[in-house]
Structures are given as structure tokens and as C-alpha cells.
Length: 97
Image 1 (tube, rainbow, N blue to C red):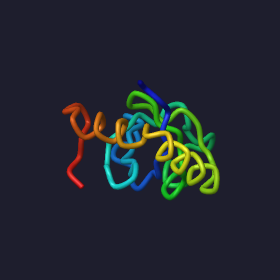
Image 2 (cartoon, helix red, strand yellow; image 1 turned 90 degrees about the vertical axis):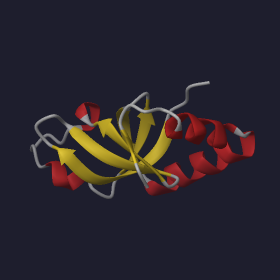
Image 3 (cartoon, one colour; image 1 turned 60 degrees about the horizontal axis):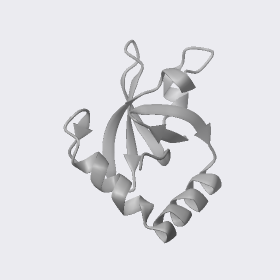
């Protein structure tokens, strides 16, 4: 199953390409940030923010409390491990922890 999963933006990899590095429960992935692009063009304002990640795209910004609640619920449902395993086993965009 493919779910949106909360991750924290930890770095801007390439502002021109709208790419950032997101940490999802210890798994670091490069994702496309186009959907959460800052209006003023200052990509650094996204560092430290939480986002909902789906198929390599940061779909929306969420607050930390919502991110933690969602991660807890996914863990209870057994979906978190499945999604993390899928992220870890995908070669595209994977960055070593």
C-alpha cells in the first residue's frame, strides 16, 4: 500500500531543481519540494518543517504534532514498517543514513 508518510525536511539539495532531503523515521530520501515551494523563493525556510511525503513528492506541510500522531497511528497499524522498508529498498533517490 502506498501512503503519505510524515518526514522532516533536513536540507535543501538543489533549490533550482526544487529538491530537498527528508528524514522519515531515520530513512533519508531526496524528494521533490515543488508542491510546498515557498512563495518568496527562500527555500531555507523549509528546513526543519514537517511534510507529508508520497511517491517522492512533499505533498503538503504539516505541523510536528500532526506528524508525530500520524507516525504513531501508522506504527500501530503496522503500515510504518512496510512504508519504511519500501523507501529503503528503492534505489531511486535513496540517500544513506
